Image (cartoon, rainbow, N blue to C red; front, side):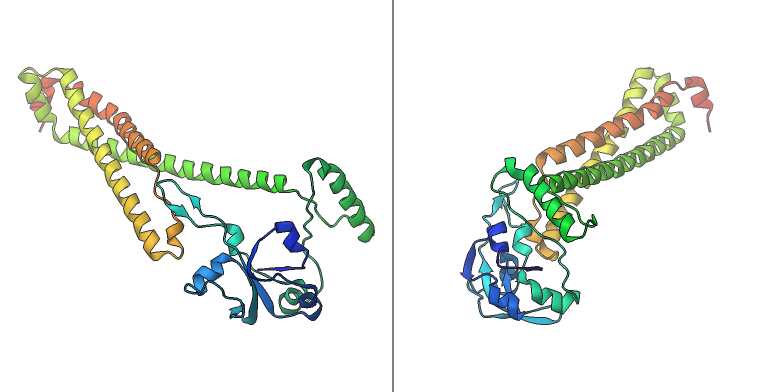
Length: 291
C-alpha cells in the first residue's frame, strides 16, 4: 500500500476502471479512502465487477474504496497457461497524509517519483533534481537519486545471484547423488566377486564385465531421474491447489525436464566408471577363491 498525491496517477498512468483516483481534497482532509488494484478485487470481491463504495480493512484501519484500477492484460506463460501475476496489480493507494498520520507518525516523505518526457533529458533532469534537493536539504547529501534502469540492473544482479545459488545447490545435490551411486556399485562389486570370477572363467571378457556394471549404474541414475521428474510435476500440481494464487505457477518447461534427465544420466555414467573398471580388472582365479 502506497501513500500518494493526485499527481502520482500521471506518473504510473494507471487506468481507472471504476471510480476515481486520490484527489487534493483527500490529501488535505486525510480521508480514509483507498484505490485498489485488481488483485484485491479478485481476492476479496470475486463476484463483483465494481467494488467502489465497499470498505476494506488494512492493518487494522478501515478504508472506503473510491477507485478501482483496470487489470493488466494477462500474459501467456509457457505451456499455454495464463499468467496472472503482476506486481502493479498488487499495489493499493491511499492519500499521502493519511499514510503519514496512521502509520508513519510524521510528515516525512520517503520517495519522490518524477517522470521524464524523453530518455535524452534524464542527465539534465537528474542534475536539476540533485541541485534542488541539495539546496532544500541545506547542503546535506542525505538522499539518493535512482533511475529505473539502475533499479532494473540491481534486479538483474539479484536474479543472477539466485540463479547461481540454486545452480550451486543443484550441483552439490548431483555430486552427492553421484557419490551415492558409486558407493552402491562398489558394494555390488564386493558382493559379486565370485560371480565375476565365474563369468570370466567361462569366457566373459573384461570389456563385458565393464559394460555390465556401467549399464547398471546408468539404469540406477535414469530411474532416479524419472522419479525426480514425476515428483517435481506432482509437487507443482499440489502447489497450484494449496498455495494462495497457486494458479500463477507455470508448468515446468520441457527443456528443463530434458536437461535434468540428461544430467542425471551423465552423473550415473560418470559415477559407474570406477566401480566398473574395478570389476573388470579382477583376476578370475582370485575371484573364484574369494569367500
